[in-house]
Image 1 (tube, rainbow, N blue to C red):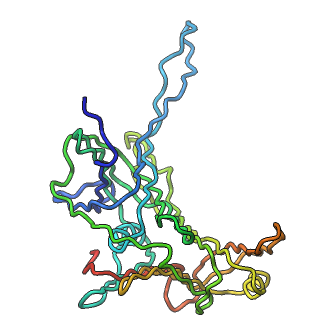
Image 2: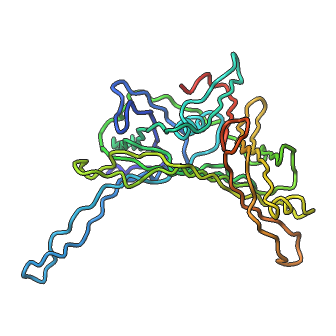
Length: 315
């Protein structure tokens, strides 16, 4: 008896023509992933109806929740499709490799159709109305560099064939932790051992309406929240002074592989006050949480992502 095997599974993504609507002539991209745990769930609610018997009454079915997390390698090409899902189509410049794709938030996010496919048994889970709800990145150490991408969606359809006959396979050209660099306040800094970036997109998950069949009929955007933390050698009090005084600064988290690169620029941040303590006899680290915001920076956003690669377009 055949059994679905993870190494044969695939995640195919496409952009919808309207919220919850698969395009009539869809384009799909087979993206590299470590795992994809998007699921459709519908709770069974115990009934309190008195039936004259001790036996339980038939349970009530609740709303349908499509949600889950995709763990994707941070790479040179595939990450651009996730960035487009988060920020919309980029501004692309260049006439030859490397092309520069600049992403920043607008007033809305595109919606996706995501398909978790199991070709070895001919089963394909299609999820419509998907949007990125959260994005998390952890730079540092020698582990595999991945992004955690939380998804909210509308509905699920299970089919025996893919929604797109020939998806475009995205070859994996990964970035690694050792290729990371950081600038703080516009200057390179080599004392940071770890940096995190968390982006929450403020989607409203309670988008259920009467007549919607229990599905989310919309996923309106709200105000973003951008935060993270840097962990650095406690060599002097320069960073600590910024935290104590609430001094505005900036961060650039960049991965570079030859002419290709991925930069997360936070033009305006403030650090949270968090003085280091004495944990033992070893070297001391200072951990500084931060918040990013938009006030008046010239880049026009609280987070500006620049991807340079050989891809001509993400339109």
